[in-house]
Length: 172
Image (cartoon, rainbow, N blue to C red; front, side):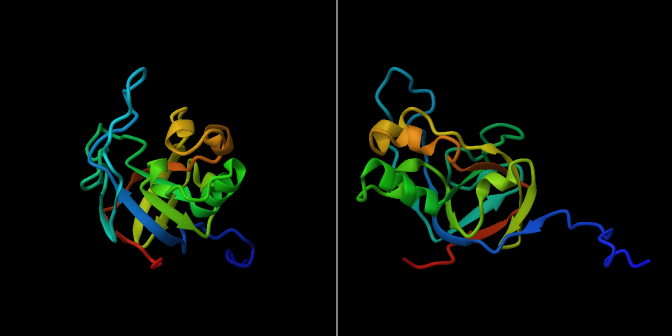
């Protein structure tokens, strides 16, 4: 009996993802969280070439760094192809992907497939916690209709399991 040939070999604990990282953003403060009935904040999303991911804490310099113990949104990922589809759906092509307030903009894999799963990008291990559902602010921040266009594909909230440096892999 050959366990590998018979499909009985243990699966790796982490799916190693060869994702293209197009953008990395951090923001020092919240623009929408906790602002129901008030104007949004004005903290910009700052694009960086690299981000230090700290296991169990988040991304250094980001508003969710050390937010709370075992926080499920220590890092958020968003698919570039979904961004383009949302632009087409709402007829807006001059809005920056940064207004979506996600940390890492990727291409090359379906984020929804990693809810509840462990994966690795650039040697850093993550655990997908849940879909990063869009909030109603998206119609104001991006364009009318963005909230509906993002439903079911708002990105991925994840926990950072191992520390490391994440870097852009594509120069725009």
